[in-house]
Image (tube, rainbow, N blue to C red; front, side, top):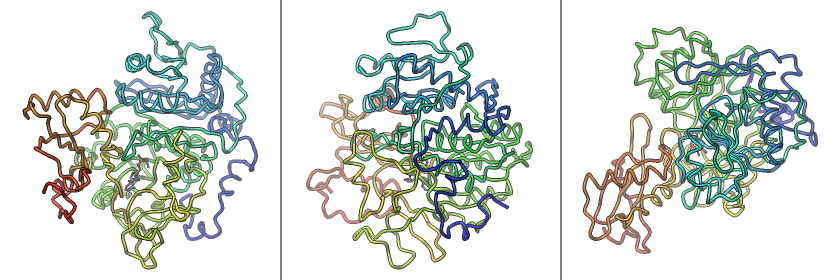
Length: 567
Ligand code: WT7
């Protein structure tokens, strides 16, 4: 029997106090996620249980018990305090998936800081806009990434320390750099966690917007209440399970379910710090006897592509609960997983802003391949008519996915941008910005986004961000960025560019522009192709119509072009 038991029973009179009680939390109590994910588990008699099996590139291994992560996070918390960082300060984590990243998040939370995890593949420009916006006071990083911080340091007056976790002890430390080694630091046995309460800020995750800079999504410690229960009921994590979340903590899945969910439940989790390879992934599952696996459609499609034969070389019988998030999970992938693993991937839906799973398939529930399932207990989700912002009175119609605010893990605001936050609400509903329909049995069917944001391999890319980078190149007059179909990533980024007079399109110029924007963008946001055009389609008011370019890429009807200026 799955943890959730019966969905129908659970949704009746559901109250989040179910989760509060299990966590021993009462409203008004001190609530610190760092403490909940380590000290509390040790107090429950699990100090010697493995919290983390870690494998790096080339097969390096490290293993940490709950007592190890308790002590190591104390040590990091105390070190940050000794440098003068205090509660409410933004502390960025900019690392590959090394143990210091996972344990560092707990350390920052324990000293009352706000953790700002950023994907380590970001270039210096992407890093800069996020550190500047958050007025980040320290960044914890590795030697190889510190180089990117050095480049932008002069523009970051608030950044007091660059903490390097793998300093070789020899090369000179530059301005504001300090070395910290988890292995060599004197362990701090006791650290009184900062008395954060439910509404104290915990994490700041940056997400792309259609216009303007990325937005910092502010979460609070109370998010634990949702993250704990969704990890238990959807990912079906149990005491003796071995859990693997393949997401990077630079993104919300990697913190909500790659740190907080499993560790607040006191289970063993595994981390593989390396790129994708079907062989390496299957081997990892076999080696650690992984029972619960949380991954993403692009990875699943890549596994499908690697073929069924290779699976026969591994013993994957430990797998019990498979789940997926981040982009549409096509029905073929669900059917395939049932065939090869004997289990369907459960499609789950949420956002950086929602902090925890909102709409999902549950273990034990009838799966309709291609559907995202039903709202989690306590979540009121509906489809609004885009004209009236009222819920449709009948089923089957495509409209906007909206959720009634008030669940514990919901964002509290966008950092320094309350105005944009307020715009996310209509008629008392939180607007996700996605489109879907609901069928007669209450299942949600995802249709697409309601904006120009591109979801490539589960990562959101703002066309605006790519266009801004392109426009800085001296040859570029104008650009428009849209998605184009791709068999693995579902969508990839494509750029249309109109050149300034005096410049001619050529393969060399294409390469030069690509190299130019590569320095500014995350590798995930890089266009797969640039197409040079004489001019871009525009409305009479001069607004570039991405819609037209996108429709061509997807082979769709172009629709109403009556407002077009230059067709
Ligand atoms: C957007 C949120 C949630 C963790 C990672 C993404 C899309 C998410 C699904 C799904 C179809 C999905 C939506 C959403 N998305 N899950 N199961 N099916 N689309 O977080 O970067 O904030 O992206 O990802 O468009 O709004 P994020």
